[in-house]
Image (cartoon, rainbow, N blue to C red):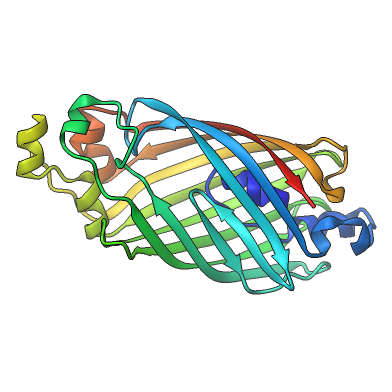
Length: 284
């Protein structure tokens, strides 16, 4: 569904049952709702936010997005990745489940490093992360149209960059405010293991000598929490008929523990991380 495309800019949330509950609540038949059959959504957006996790320098990045469903298998976007839901959703179900593989890529401190001191510490390798996602969605919570989802992604680097594991639990509530407009709020946290934390947050003696930053040893733990909000607007006036839609998002994250205490954040950046995004999507 289109909201998954929008929410990818907030936190990579995959919520596949919302369009079904909207169609049911508005007494629409499956043929009236493009999301009740095989479909594809393609979109492009731009995000304005920190140049790396913990940075206080902002940069603009393009974000291509893809979402769809084919023969019961759903493809949902993630921030810099994609997830697959192998559990078909039911149009009239009160509760829907989702589970499947997820893949993503991390360019954290790999490019667009504006801070000369951080850049002197050295560019990091891009990480390719593979894992799994699972979640449960409760439909029609406060009204006949809304939904509440609890989900989590867990991923491991398979490219030999950080070589560790990261997992992110999150909750999302969404509801339409009209046939054309939808709003959602999301909260999440991220936990990283020692390999991940040491790669991105530690300052080795060699990095210290090159950059002048103090030596620092990072540990595993929760490295960030965040919340976001979004608005999506269908240009035809009906979310169910496909076509073009506009979206805008705002997101805040707070770096924690090693993510906050690392000199890359505490001396050269900021623990407060704001991201803005906007774009357009087309569904057929």
